[in-house]
Each structure stands twice: as structure tokens, then as C-alpha cells.
Image (cartoon, rainbow, N blue to C red; front, side):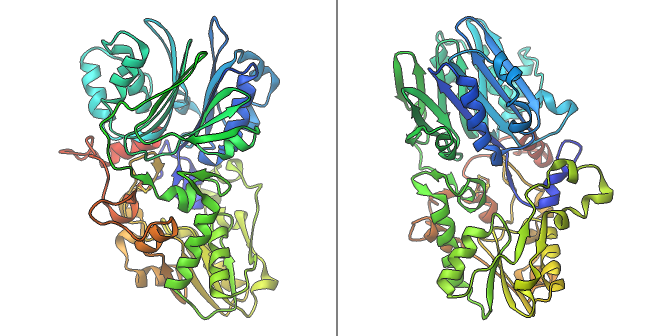
Length: 489
Ligand code: SF4
């Protein structure tokens, strides 16, 4: 969906976008500088804005900026303002400029017993319902983000201590949430009962760390301790760490798309190395959807590990037939409609010498609207390919995500309105193949999808959502909920 609050780059590269990364550290003098590095490693989870909140023993410091971490938080003056030995941070994929600032996280408020900051990766599916109830009781919201709901629920809870108030709050919300929160005395991490979004625990010379992915630990040389379990809440204080499980136990439903596209390939999430999974995805794809061809070419960068797996399984040469320009940023893509259509040419170029006269298998992670695929296929044909076959490292994306991923409306998803044959015609390929759902589950180490009780969230492929979508029920709020999703974590 592209609207006033959605970045143009969302359409320009035609991918689902994870909307947030979170990072926190407790017990280290240079906390804000460490958070900056952690967020830099998580930049792929959100490039539009970022924020850090630190606590120095007497007061909180809040910095929130539009732009990349490297453009804003590496200025010494900014880091110098973020004193303290504990800090949390957030990087987000969402709005740009102006009104967008009000949604930049972490959210911070002075509560009756002191300052409290919260950063959220995910999206609450009952945020509007809860917000309406809170507004009737007098709460005033200053953002359009679902995350602010959590802050209000903590603030208005009748429980006595912060842990109990936090638990009271998270028990009232539904959907996906990996949270990192900070008070004057503690850092809290919490995953929703289904564990839809990732959150890992790390250690840096005795300082506890919470981060969306392990790549954020690697950048600072921290030790990976473990994934937080679905439904787990950890409380870090100067005395150590405590783990509790405040929710009724449920079968986990981790987001399977994290393996397909969102997580960085050098991360391990839920005990699996993302790069390994992506290579296995490519191998499954080659088994399920073989093709007579001369070379396997990834659509870089996201299609690369799957293309390697495809090429190894199929015994076909892997070639970098498309080169990506890594220096195309928002400034080039966003000035206006007149250059929007050029996005793909700015970003990718065919490596003509590798492609000319060849039968090419193009491997990409997914097809969303199909506009980018169409342009890339044309570019490969223009470079002299004899045949172009496309293989997609996931099942067709047919439904929107309401769990913290920027997704177009369902009607704009190519697979929701076309058969595979029609899609092949639309993007003008000689053949088109998608990975099956069972193939995807096999690639992550399962025997296949358990259709009675699926092991993962795969709603954008299956349309079967693992939670109630309360804000949608009995209303025509699909657009509103997606707006919340886009403005949320
Ligand atoms: S709907 Fe898709 S992208 Fe969203 S959480 Fe589920 S699997 Fe992940």
C-alpha cells in the first residue's frame, strides 16, 4: 500500500518489509554507543527512523531521528547526550518526515513511579479496540502507533509494581510483539505467546543484551546466550536476570517469512542459521521445479542464498548475471512520481556478458506486486537471454500481514488475483515456479506443514492467521488495521 504515510521505496523495490528492529543493553558505561552499533546491524529491519533512550542514574535521555543510524546516531554530539549505563533502541520502517516523527520509537513517558520507555517489533491486532476503551477513560494518544497502547496500559494498570503492571498490559494486547522496555531500575524483554517475531538474549562482558537478531550481537562481539522463548518475559536488573512466563502456553507460530527474507542471512533465529535455511529453500525449489537451463542467476541480494542452493542442487553454474547498486538510497528513489518508475534500473543492472545467449533461471525470494519482477525479466531479456525462467523461494504471497510487516493491500498482491500461469504471462517469463508450502517447511527442518496445527505463522501464504484479528472483526477496518501496521512497529 502506498499512501501519504508510506515510503515510496516500498513500491520501488516491491518487497514485504519487516518494520522494526529492537536492541537494549543493561550495565555498560557506553550503553548508547553499543545500542547504535546494534541498531546499525539491524538496519535491514527498518531504514526510516530510529531512536534511543538511555538512563544515567538520575534522568532519562531521549533521541529520535528520521534517517539511517549511520546518518544520525554516529554524530558524537548525539551519543554524548545519551548518558548512562543502560539504553534501548529501535529502528523502524515506516513514515518519513513531518508527522512521522510522532511514531518514532522508543516511546517514553513519565509514569507515576518514574520514566518508562518501550520499543516494539511487531503489530498489535487489537490496538484500536484497546485504544478506544482507553480513550473513553480519558487517555490521550499522541501517535498513531499501536505501541503507544502498551505504554498507556502500563500507565493505567492498577497493579502495584512495574513487573505486574507490564504483565497486566501485555496480557491485554493481541498480535505480534517482541518488546524491549526500560525503567530506571530494569530492562524488560518480552515475546508474545506465539513468538511471532524474534528476540534474542546476549551478553557482553557481563552486560545483558536484548536484540532482534544475532547479527546485532556479532557486531559488538557479544555472546549469543539464547532466543527468548515464545511467551517469555525477562527482567534484567543490577542483581541479574529473571525469566517468567506470564501467558497461557500456546503452540509457537514464529514468522516463517523471517527465514525467506526479513532476517539477515548471517543471523540465527529460533535455532536455525538463516543462510543455511535459504540455501535449503533453493535446493527444495530445484527439486520441486526443475528447469533445463544454462545458468542460475539471483535477483540480488535477497535471492542470492536460495540461488546458490538451487544451483548446487540442479548442478547448474551460479552466475552474478544481475549486479545491484548498493548506493541507491531513499534520496534517489523518493523525489517524486517522475522517477519512481526508474527505481529498478537505478538499483539493478544486467551483467550482459554472463547472460547473452543463455537460458537463465532467475531466483528471487518472493513476488509481491510483480512490478519489479516484470522489469528485471525485461532487463535480462534486453541483455540477450535466450530464455528466462523464474523460480521463487517461497509460496505465492496471497494475503496481507498484520504482524508488523509493511504489506500492500491484498488486492495488490499479484498472487491474490492471478493464477501462476497468468503471473508468468504478466512478468513475461518462459516458466514460473514457486516453492510449495511443504517445501518451505522442509527447508526449515520440518517434515512438512502440519495442517491441523501449523508450526509457523504462514498467513501471508495460507491466509490462515494464528491470532484473532480483533480490530477487523465486524468492521471494514482492513485498511485502518494495515495503516496501524504501517505506522506501528
Ligand atoms: S503473515 Fe507472513 S510475514 Fe506476517 S508474520 Fe505471518 S508469515 Fe510472517
